[in-house]
Image (cartoon, rainbow, N blue to C red; front, top):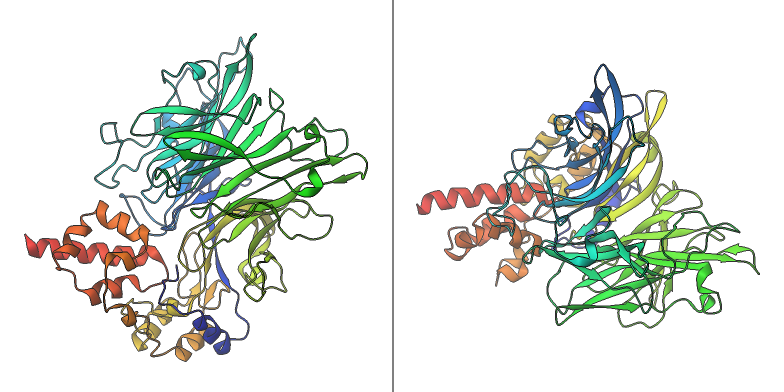
Length: 581
């Protein structure tokens, strides 16, 4: 995270100290410890929060008698130790000892999203194990709670275990039929959105219906489709959540039920027939709003098109994609899209000619990540600051000419998909998956991209780059370990060596303390994610009592990565509270 006092010009200073460094350092998140010996094990990152915690899934071997089967398991990765959990490795959220004799294969799952408090949502699926019957799959929306999380939570009266299956026993009549469900996103106020199969109409037809679930009510509300559509899906909620003026939920609404969706875009495919929908919270009642479509879609039969919103930020910027097969032109129109607040038109995000694409996530800085579907490559779209008018620019994250990531030196052959971008100040952290070379074999691995900033050279966090930081850098010499953000790697080549020392030496005496902010320092000048966690750990009392000095707070927070700054700040709060007692 680049805090507000880290001036944009500092990146140029680093460029002058080292020839054309990459923009991001890449971290291979690896696989879960149980999977290290599994030759075909894959990992994918699906989401992250504002303090750098990542969720996704990993292939894990599961013992069944004398045999072993491979199952997809939900996982969590932490940049720093927290809640009694280690940092730098994928932590499995669903374990083998949770398998029952009645459902031997109830082990598949994905962690889809995580909020700043560390609450994780996703999906877990199970198969009936009765050999006399065909396996029947049931999938459930799940919520995982940190076992040693913040002392306040709307879930305080629930057993704080690793897993809690929620809203399956709801009294909502419209959700009593059909067990299938998934939780896709969670906001900072513990509100969850997703979708679930329900029975609708007469005679009843099983359809998908989006929902939003508020922890305070312990019940879900169906998100109504647009017009006479029978189905809806909710993919994303913005971080601000329950503020009625700012709550936004993005998804889709369809005319065909049951839903048949496909990532293909070819002649003769099943009719799509769905449109993007944004639900706005108005007087505690969600009303769907069908977004305006691109002009070229206006004449297309709706049954041949499909658009959905997959990401929404606190400004109301949305991203997604869609299209369909145009029989006359014989061309696929599946394009990445963005909706800007207050703009009636839809932006068609730039992409290579005749390529398909989709936007997956958008942050507060209006950075959008997604995928070029034609190439199967991770993409970043952002505002072109050199343009006199608003323009989006297209960046393929593994493009060698752009040099956003040092691919060859770090062992990556391709970045396949970018699924999440965080709300870190300045520039977001990005997660996804790619192909990583292990020995002579390529493996599918989750990655994390963190912007490289000059003040990363202040390794001890004292507010200035000094000889002490050079000493710490010297101690870190060597290849960057799997699963750990290598902060001493200042040129992003996944090794700490003399090249990084040269960069750090050129930055000696660089002021990273943010002293210009010490006058009139207040909680309003502190990033929101820090305030939320201070409150959780009693930080507000320490600040109000002035037991923590302004200079000490600034020194703790100056660093680019949030986890290090938070750990330092928490330690400071703990010291201060002990002195008060």
